[in-house]
Image (cartoon, rainbow, N blue to C red; front, side):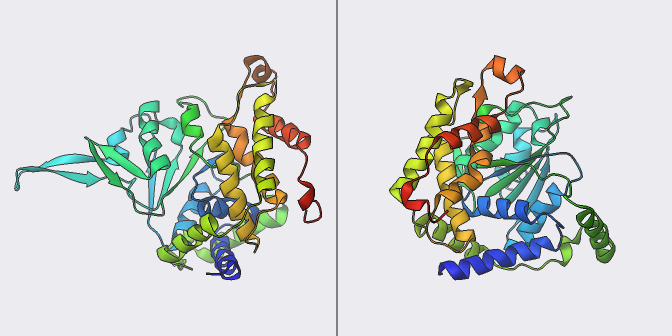
Length: 324
């Protein structure tokens, strides 16, 4: 496929999902760009902001399987990965696959489960496989996790460890409706649906094979100049050097920024990356990978502030100044 065709299909997916999600065009583009980059998304926001509906809508529009797991304190790793059950007829153990064997996995309120259960997703998210009782099973592609957590309710929660956070390509917020018109639009949409969940009436815009082709195009056909690679690496290194940072982004953070920049270029109808693609996602890709010094965290310094300061200190490649 050519970049124009892929851009057209991506727009069609956004339009279909936009039928269910009103007034959140930019957030929807962020999520689609992330999954085109073969990454996972952490949505950190308050309840009732359509995070679950977004995940279901994307799965429906992409023509892939969807599974939802409600994370709770008593959830076990086997509840996610699956379990071996003894079959009395065959006198053998049979493996029953868990909800992780899907294409779109919604990990709802992921921070309500204990670390042992959270870690059950680590191998699946990074290597797209699970190992159970010594047997390794590959997951069907595409596979991506859309996880949610409430950023202000801490009672009965387990903060995500750094290793888990690092597996998410982006961490973002949905936010409240921006305007009165958007708020009214949500109410009108609910009246027109006649039900709370409109995804049953949505139609797939593309199929699984087409989506995999789109991901492959982002991976292999979108060009990135060496100067832009240096720009990405320069930002990551500048973040690490900040005196407020105890532990900065690893090379995985730089790779995340690389992949999402390529996907953003494609979503904008280009088969090459410019610095604006990097700037667009640099905060969402790097801020959650920063561990601040205790004194700075206590003072209210955020990872976002550190990344913003680093971007200002790194010069934009001169070859691309006009293209910005």
